[in-house]
Image (cartoon, rainbow, N blue to C red):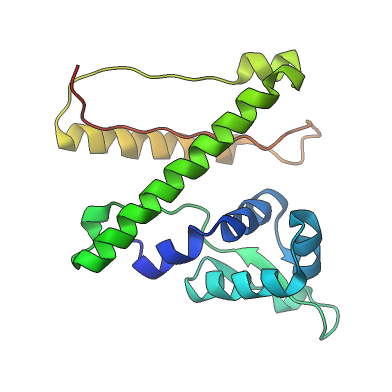
Length: 182
């Protein structure tokens, strides 16, 4: 189960961007992160320490060439939780706030794509997708779908060969499944 400390750590906009950068580019120095994310070095250092306390990132001292640089890598690239995972009312409230922040993040990514889609190449416009469907299911069946989707994403990620010479761009995918009324 994801801890409330992890939720607090990862749902800060700058920390989310740090995690995305480390996922896409691998280990990085604080100065590189600051430059790429247009943030101050001190701010990035603070956010990295917060993520480190939550076990999301880790220092990589073997990459440091001197005592003035610190390297960091992503330790946890996914965070999954339900507000029902938490027993105290205060933690459930914070988990629900994290859910709202996560949805805001997802919708902001989708809105940015929709604003910029016309400038993307035709192949990217054809590859981008939106899908939804209606079905009937028990809670256990919906949970099984979530697990199957997560397994499919893990398999898809593992199938990508970053050394095959193909030119790749970061992509963002999100799905939701929940009970509804027609």
